[in-house]
Length: 346
Image (cartoon, rainbow, N blue to C red; front, side, top):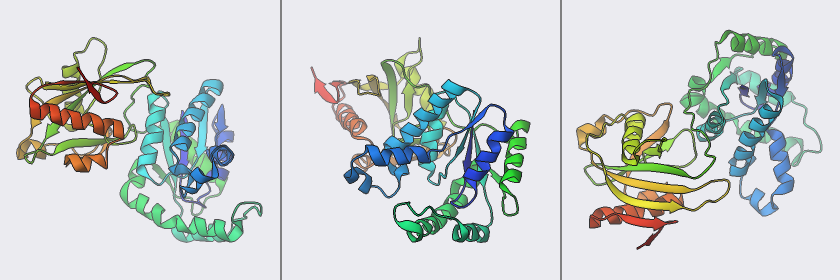
């Protein structure tokens, strides 16, 4: 289990986490700041200069997942993680990656009043050897207040268990967290658990269109990037039926007819991925009534939208966009295509 302590800079996450590991039996502190510090030595300066925060580095998010999983495999028990996460897509990627490894996450939000936060930032001791010096570090902390407000207003309060630490010491806050976790007041985050593949996989996606022939894309909570409705085919399951099942699970739309095959694409292994066969089916056109029945984003989806082929280019990763382009050409021609790594053959 992971207890993730979130909150703005100055909320007292690290000091509370240090107290918490004394209150939760067999618990260990894991500070993802260590990963960011290591990347400063591992990555070329040019790459580091391209991002404003190490959280924007995909390698940082992946290493946080992998390191947390490795520590729990090595030590067992509970991992206490003090780390600010203000972007929902990063929270979804990290928590989804942990869920894929069957690791439940209890999400805690330390939420003192903003006036208290500002007082703590002003009085915070800053090590003199930090890059940028004391003035830059304090300015950086203040700059994160507005993103923190935005996260509170949109998703953070609803997602995490809040603890108002305005008048609490670090020990008192830790005691409240320990009690809430022990009593089950803080449930595991409601996020889909998609197991990490251990070999090549067979996946089926379904293209659904609106009355303007725009294609439906979804933004899953459990992995980065936009995608088509669909997922991995389970053992003994027919691929088209798997696509139909996934459409219903993700969007609430029930397809009555088995969709027609558009594309079979062999995706070559690219570590850490294993590759495999990717199938796209034509789920047909939804009328305005069907489109209106699409479920709002829930545990599986952060968002969904109908897009043109050109708009899809800005949302889909290149490999998925290439697959979509050929699927649309196959739909126009009325004949399925066989691809290898996105290139038609045969």
